[in-house]
Amino acid sequence: MADVIVTITPPPVITALATPSAIAVSVTAAPAVAVTVGPVAGVHNGLAGLQGGIANEYYHLSAAQAAALGAGPHNNLTGIQGGALNDYYHLTLLKYNALGLHESLTDLLGGQALQHYHLNAADYAARILGSGTLGYLPKFTGANSLGNSPVYTDGTNVGIGIAAPTAKLHLAAGSAVASTGPLKFTSGPLLTIPEVGTIEFLDGRWYLTGSAKQRVIDRTGDVITASVDAVGNTETTLYTAALSANAAKVGRIYKIHCDGVIKNKATSDDVTFYFYRDAVLINSVAPTGGRYLVGTGWHLDYNETVRTVGATGTAAMSGEIIIGTVVTQFDALLTGINFTLNRNLIIKAKWSDDNDQTENVVTIYQGWLELKY
Image 1 (cartoon, rainbow, N blue to C red):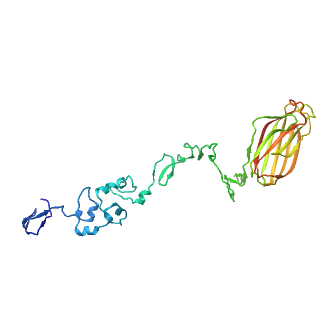
Image 2 (cartoon, one colour; image 1 turned 30 degrees about the horizontal axis):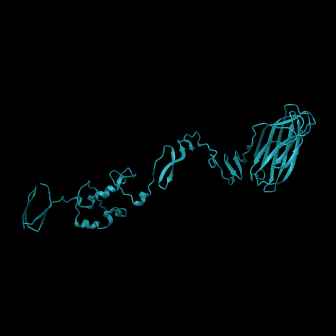
Image 3 (cartoon, helix red, strand yellow; image 1 turned 90 degrees about the vertical axis):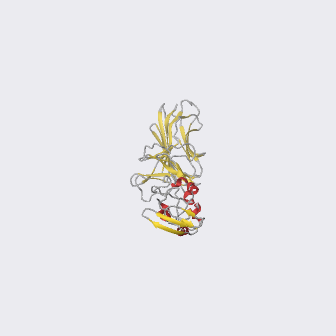
């Protein structure tokens, strides 16, 4: 026979005989007798027992233990969020189910088997969710969400905008749209002590340190790819280099090179070269006259060093024109140059007369601009 607890109301007169295997109870009482049979007293009557209970079991608390739990907000979810350490709580089945998957190890890292956890509202709202693609560094796509960034790594190389990098750092190509260039520098101070392999950018100039000195990287532009003929006594533009406003820096050197072929019918047929800054004539040079047979080569080198900048800048100019073996040099100091405006360096040529235009011809094959410093 299982052990039972018997409660009898009203109090009867009880005679009990104990035997090793059972308890015999003799009850003498009024007809109205209520008998309540419950689980045996044991660990499930203590708070310790509540921790290890099985689903849907029913527990018995003594009056003192029930009083120890106290009446208050700990019987609802609101109270559970604000409970104190070592408090014990009671959840109805409905409230327990409302906790959802956040009570499982799937959602909470570091938990132990069969343990159950609770997140308060602030922690739950602050959780970070999202997914991504293998190899991509994550980025925040919202306050609490993650997605792919444009940065990819295969564990050895890193690509920005490219998923198959073939260098330690591999940048995707840019486009013709503004603000889509693959790489951009912001002007800033140069290193006080140069460091080998460093590239720096200051005041419109790129500096490269190859050994112990910071050297400016030369740039080439305004390259012509089509021949131009100058005939007759009207000036014909052979070459134009576009210079940006405020791009001039003290000490910057502009170098223009042009070359091609020339021919004339007679020694008296002379050619003159003109150098302009927009519509302002800088200099004109008439090489020493001579007879130029078909295929005679010529080349021109023009150098301009900026001395002062601003709206009334100055520069030193020098150069030479070589036709065949004849060298003609020229030099000048230039004043009143408005470096604050966009401007063009222009080279033109014309002949001394309009006669024999098919025989008096200067042709340019190549032309380019170099910026130094």
